[in-house]
Image 1 (cartoon, rainbow, N blue to C red):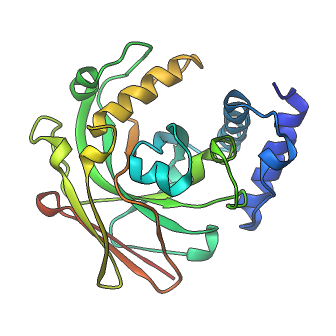
Image 2: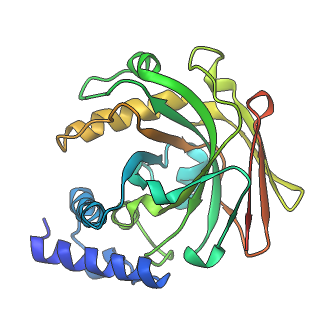
Length: 261
């Protein structure tokens, strides 16, 4: 495993890349023996510093839970990252494109918890019981590590490439409908670019939340009541540019929209 000095040095690089809106060279090209646990050590150090600087943790994101996302990235297992309050936008927001790098959008469902979920034996049924409501969301992806050739180790170290979250639409109770059949249409500048069904996320989006609760148990952590959990994308990443308007139509669950300037 990487020693504490190397973990700290990588966290320094990532913090500077976030500050300057830049990218750093791929970690696995420089530390070929770096493991998934090393990557989470880097992410946790970056998160610890952010919280020490006053940023408020409000939730978690789960990534790479669907076949379409795994095929798009060449990565075959899920990952997770942290969400801070300053990364949350409401639907209709105008967002500065230049504050992110390699900007892409994904459609997801988010689970807002009313009870703590602590692994290692959390099931999909535990997740549904612990959820206050489910709401449509868009994830804005931003990469602080170069894209070409990156592995899951690079992605995890990069806080799972989370840039921001846009949420809106109509919140629903988790038992109000079969969440597997939530479908959405993704538009960019009034042109339909993609569509998907939530079952693409591990056959049920709540299964991703259960996976995360159980994964966090290995680090002595839990999903806490009140947290906002992005369950994973059911569409491939869509590139966006300054001037683009993004509109995600979730049917009966409403819509989520944002514009980049």
